Image (spheres, rainbow, N blue to C red):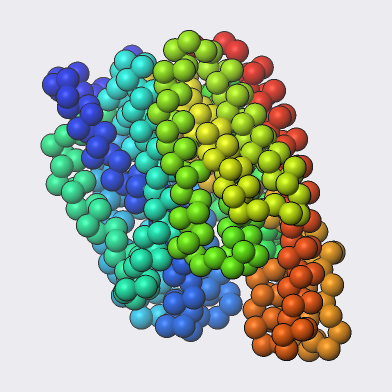
Length: 503
């Protein structure tokens, strides 16, 4: 049975008008992913959170979001995707206004968790609605390319918008930004976006929702802890707990006649291969950004906004590549296009590896441009294949899997490559004698710590510390780039094999 939608009764131009409206929450969520990091210093100064509170201000949103993407995607299939989108937009706008004026760190943490709850309603709904609004495969690929471009464009705007707002307004302005973006969606969404849902949805399963949360939240938390403090009980135990609960979730889905998530979708090699390509593309992008952002600011001495503008060409190429690949895939098989994009990611890392410790900012810009072309190509086609390889009625669940892969790719990119980079830095940095013990410990942990400590040191001692710290950091960049090359080549081989039957 086909999915129920009102789009068939819409004029020819209506789907594209609907797409414009759907891009509003996409841009907002993408900006929100990168803008908060710029507000952390101002939040710390204003609310005086403790170390644990500051960690939860940052982490509450992605943890709740990751845990609820699959349940919300499936609920959209059952209750109506447009309805869930509008509920999510209303809640996100209202809670954003509360977060902007939060008087305490505790209230801000609660608001961030609530934003994760409502944010989980937005992204799967936008992608699944696109799947059902655009029934022509070529138009759908173009629409998904625009969706992916909006996500990349939002990521590019985050540092620029955040820098501007924080330069002219208080920290709450980065949250208040959601209100003017989402109000047009709430007005135009009911008019332009057709409703769609699974015509035979089955009952809501609270136990499966709880198991999904119980699997994803500790798993993502554990991965983030690896990035922050390395492998240890505080990271391994949550990861093992998440995997254990995840196995219970899978077993329950296999037993149920109408599961929350049909895990048998993963037996389709096109679906599972596309999810893997999606995850690894984001992994490569976020892992690259982890070290290039630090290099531009802490080694080259650029400000946050200037560093964001320096990366803008690569993000523009990401958008252009995502749109251009729609025409390419008409003549070249999707497997070759996705594999080619992943190989471009490897070439981007190769540029960093070849330049070694003498790498220039222009070299990093070139590497990011190449990487952007690869990510834009692979992401657009892999997202399209994820949606087109499942029945339209399951578009919400498939979209949620795609979004979950994105979130996991982001945290893994930071955790895996970031942890390796940090370990190489710690083993390579030489802290000069004469620096107080606490400062020496901070300088030996991260490049940011060394830069902060150097400010209070005599010029000669500061120069010795910074030279050693920067050399150790760039040594780590070289090693992580080599690992990135190997992973992207393996990913390309997997894509060629798993996607060979895709049309």
